[in-house]
Length: 170
Image 1 (cartoon, helix red, strand yellow):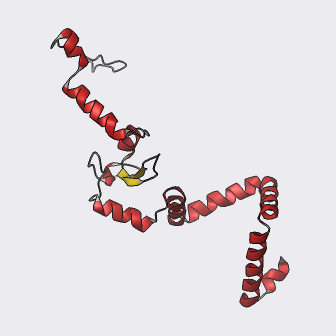
Image 2 (spheres, rainbow, N blue to C red; image 1 turned 90 degrees about the horizontal axis):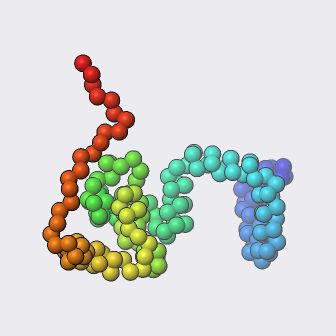
Image 3 (cartoon, one colour; image 1 turned 90 degrees about the vertical axis):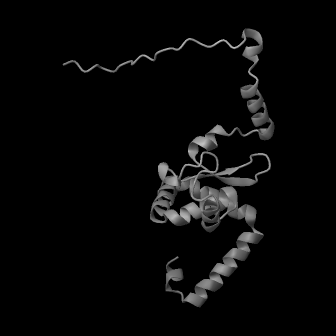
């Protein structure tokens, strides 16, 4: 390795090309070598990864978006502009939330649908039949089954208790 540091830029690029070709031709051997190295220096490699992520937050976010959703930061920004900077479901602006809007995608087709706040994204089930679920929900709200059985009976209004709150005593 000390010889590598003494090489010129051209010499280093030749070594890198050769290394790349060898790794491609010897993928299994290379994987074994990499696994052994990582097992031996796991804590150091994890620390290096964490430090790199802290030092390069935009690059880390870009890498994560590409890996998970196959989109770039610019494409995510375009989607946000298309949504007028708000959650696609509840229409609240991104500034209302601590975290950035999440990329929502269909888990069965992997189709990216838009950007949602954490609450709306958690509300959407990861089911294939999402449209039918909302049709059923709308039918339930319009025609509740309890009305067929009980008629239009209202529940008793219940006052909420204030557990643990102390009243101001003057």
